[in-house]
Image (cartoon, rainbow, N blue to C red; front, top):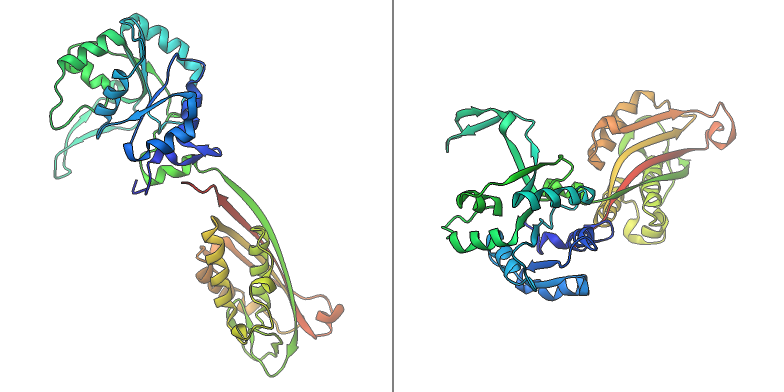
Length: 365
């Protein structure tokens, strides 16, 4: 997955993935053993405490499981060994008693789900060689449960080649021993690829509201959503006075509980004198993104008696979409008058309201 640490340390439901998976089996088994990368063994021990035995693992799954098996205390020939991937946190433990019963009767059992896609066997050149009957194709999962005596016998007989088995069931097959399939469901996925991270990253959605108002200043250009509106007085402000973007920025900051535009870009700081609000928006999005927030959609209402803004709505949507990185269908811009009422109706300035939806994923590591 390209992570700088083992994926078992990813955050899931507020704690490391490995701690969550271990907790699934606590109280259901006599002993839990966790083989880990040796350079992280102290970290795993710190996380798991006395809930299990943490040992140095091997370079492959085969080696790690074998080391775990060999470290079991007071192993009996008829004991059952449960092997489970720490990257499968969604396992339904309520199915385990039935699976253990069947494993005791059969000597070996694996959880597996029935294939739902058509299975194609292909060549190295990615040409289809054969289509398999998916009625007889199952996708192996864990837990995998084995009689300790049989597992020991397999370890003694099996000599791994350059390509050790990807699971212990394959070793049983090689030794000519039958393995029973316990029909599982697809709700027991393994966290393997980067795209799988979304399965364990819980998220929260937040709504933010922003409001801003600026008075007219005839000597300045009118800029709304980064679009220059011709034949209209501009707005007074320390920056380019883009009242629409200021409302959007405040809404984004509000959703993220990060204050307001004045806190981040004070109007007495010469750095922001005349600065483009598009630049300010970019800086805010960079800050919120680094804090784990993603923008979902924007709804913006501009209140102006003058100028007539409807001819520029599409341009403003396109500009907003471009600068925030959302498709146009996730950006809505509306313009309305105040029917001649208030300072807006008296043509003294423009106001804007914005509502945004943000999503925050739980950070990992």
